[in-house]
Image (tube, rainbow, N blue to C red; front, side):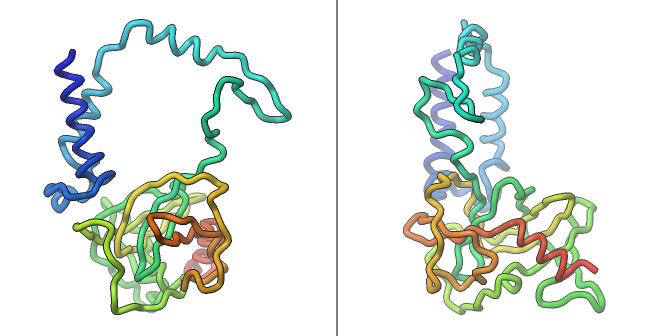
Length: 241
């Protein structure tokens, strides 16, 4: 049992220290792009799911969920809990376009893929609609988010977050509508508190302000949070017939 605990601890250090959640110096990242694609990560997940159930596991969770809850207005509050409520947090996907770091709600992020060939659509492709991409046999509309947000093209690139910088394509989906767009760098998922969201000053970003809900301070950067509802409405109006 002690060996399995030690093994799990070492595996955790793999992705938390040198992997995607750490400083990203793992030499395998250039092959697997993300830790979740690595067999070491997958093996750790299987071991976690297949481990033996600890003693008193059922009793402890039964006790946890049976705690008395107090109804305060329309909300349920657990008296002994001083942790941040789920409704007060926001999980976003962070990525870079040109020199701008942007964020979208994780709820609309379907997946990220390696860059793939974009097939132009005759008489339809333009600055915003780039064409079609094949994702596991399914054709998806590919757009240029940079043009939609009116980002200025820059010849100089910002300092990378890690030694390995890789471009990706992001697939987003909402209300049955899916879109794909390339990004210059994808960081991953990050969680903020809602009270960390601030309105950006006019000079804070070159992103069209109509698409921005606000910004977060993140790793000494200004992170623009995109209004996904307006984004999908604009794409439907400007791209779809």
